[in-house]
Length: 261
Ligand code: NAD
Image (cartoon, rainbow, N blue to C red; front, side):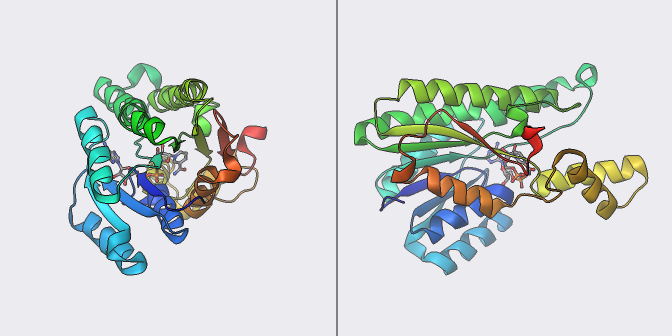
């Protein structure tokens, strides 16, 4: 990784985002953590990071990524505290499962806002600064569902396909600069977002959480293992490095072979 790097990781108080933030901090970057609010759980994560990496190396931005003004404020806060935004990891995301004709309108709007529009808001806020400083890495966390579909995930699949398209457009528009834009496409990663789906399956099928956990992976992921947040983080750190300067516009599955089928 080129140093120093100042990194924003959205949705980093749990799951994949938290794992990615750890990998950047371990690599020596300053990390702006993000959640909607600095509540007790978020404060605990911030304290854990500051204890591990140093008080000056980690900060927190309260920001709902679905609100463009708050995204702009998060970028400004990062520049004010760290001096620049070199890497923007857009990871915050939500899920809801339901058949397409039953999909609640409010859930559709919420998923499109948090999983897709937020990525546009982040690019809109950070890219001019990256172009001005002649360096930037935008890393969007899409999903295998940005490349292929599954039943009962209409809004999520639409949003994640949108993220993959937006990643390509941003890459083409920045291709002659030192800014790159790529997407990471995780398969199953055992995080609160997926645990919720496993609990729902166990309830619907009268099975246990453990049984459904194994069934979920076996259905889709040929490796039959979950990918991990730290594996996503390691790929993101690589994409932020000089070695990845010619990788742009790509959407990279980390999915145990899911999308090879
Ligand atoms: P998670 O629920 O553990 O984490 C999501 C994070 O986003 C949370 O910290 C949450 O507080 C935050 N968040 C949600 N809405 C927000 C908002 N409006 N503003 C700011 N923060 C917000 O889920 P995860 O599994 O770690 O998911 C992270 C990303 O990875 C998501 O974009 C998800 O779609 C994607 N993904 C996850 C998997 C998986 O198997 N877990 C697979 C493919 C893609």
